[in-house]
Length: 216
Image (tube, rainbow, N blue to C red; front, side, top):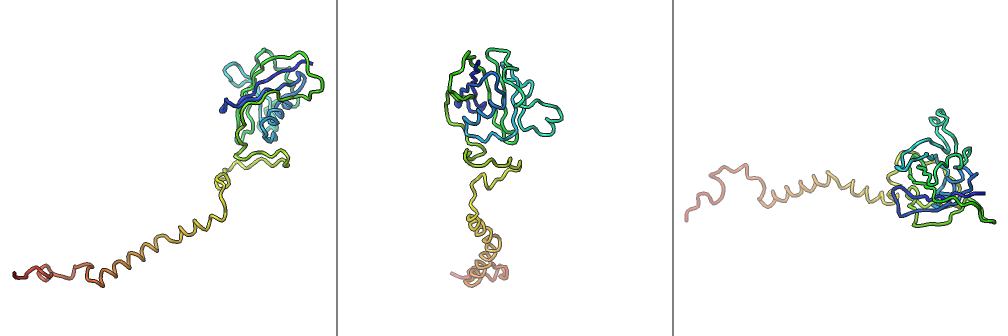
């Protein structure tokens, strides 16, 4: 059985790459899951491969966990499409988007075709790994944990900033010492000025102010 060796690189992190061997009769879903076995990501998010040219322009789409729009457009599913169906070039390229809500984009390029597989090897197989994959959604995915639901599209600012609820007390203290405290301080300063006679002198006529008519 022939093997395809793909090099997978992040579009925005070109120093991170994976080489993956896949059997020619395996599917795009097999490659999709192999990529995230190598990155440590949870693969259960809507994603798509696109047949690409040398400029990484998107062509025909092959999808995973499609939304209703893709279902209505009858976009073919990854688990139904064998890789060999779209290998027309010895350096065939696929543009790959993982998780449309918070996407990572990848370049997937066929590096070589190997005529025979290695006995005893389970495919797909990661044969080369360079660089550490960026964290998934700001958190390292735990492969032993159960798959979680797709996160809401709303951005959770406090969670992303690792906000500690106990810190709320600090914010309360700042809020409590607001305009009222400033006004009280202003009143105290005015009273102190009046007590020592350094307040407003509007009640004095120009001629009555001390020192104006003193004879020397």
